[in-house]
Image (tube, rainbow, N blue to C red; front, side, top):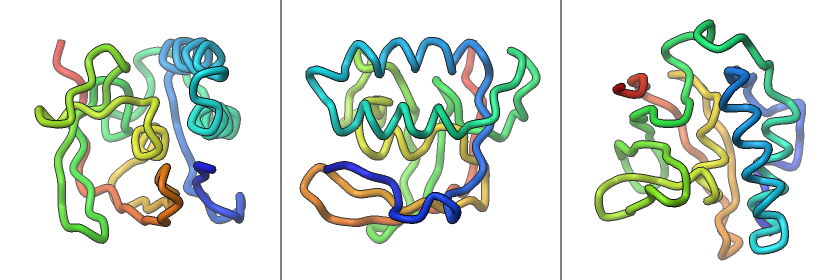
Length: 135
């Protein structure tokens, strides 16, 4: 089972713009048959997020297309958060429909989150830097 943390009160505050929130909700619902664990985690994250008008989310919040540098047990890594069709691990493009992708959405530098990989191994990551999507 993929999950973020056993204690909801310890989860960091999330901010997501309305367009991302809508698109990601639709995506998670559509994926719930094929990927129930990660879809459930993503829906839980979307449920607890503060949704703001498009264009008013702080630039340092992870959103779709953001380039994110995070620190974890295995060191520091920079990735771009993308929709499943754009994902390419080798190129550093992480799908939102992965446990780590669902964990990243809505976070800002300095925030940490615990998440569990598909193999059941627990991890923690801390956001170091967020660059907004390039248009």
